[in-house]
Image (cartoon, rainbow, N blue to C red):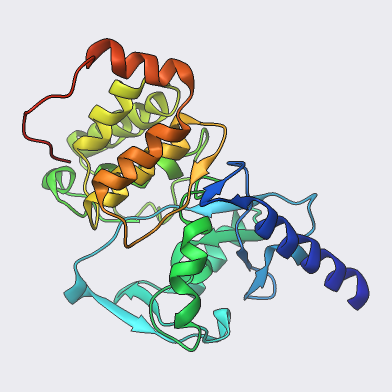
Length: 273
């Protein structure tokens, strides 16, 4: 059994090395590097996961830094501090997902290496592959949808939304107002429609109005959505202008044709994201 697990881990490692060529990712369906084994309550390498079982992703909103804390946990082997809202509880999240019948989950703060910890030197290197291939519970008030912390307004939400998501954290005790529920349903339906768009200008326009930690994320987030033959790596040191140039190098011909049709010549307008 141990030999089989070691073999699978080695194959997974080799796959991640082979998929990176000249600062490009040759395929978009790269599985996550780590997943949360809910039964064992531990983060484990994807290579040891039973391929017959589905891995679910947990997409969530963020809170202001003052409402967040960094916690060390045995779940990820205390590899890095896990940024969590002060009123959130990993055990409750685990129980809810188990009740939904899930066994393996991907939660970014647990499975995607964060800043700090004993493996900090691996942080930027892992993100080159892990961030571009991401794609694989709040008490809502009417003004939530205007907040920069709103999940619907995040740049990476476009990449994380699935066809048939499960809305977590619902207890039935806090029934939202009709206005809020209607807005929530409209926004969720809109996200599903966006994921089926393939036109560059539509996706770029949608991404332009979204919130991110930096301009680079709005450009990098387009790569997965445009489904090019290969994806640029995520380089946190790259400027948004350089990221856009790299993205154009991997776009499909019809995507480039669309851009040149509407913008045949360089402009002198103000560029912004």
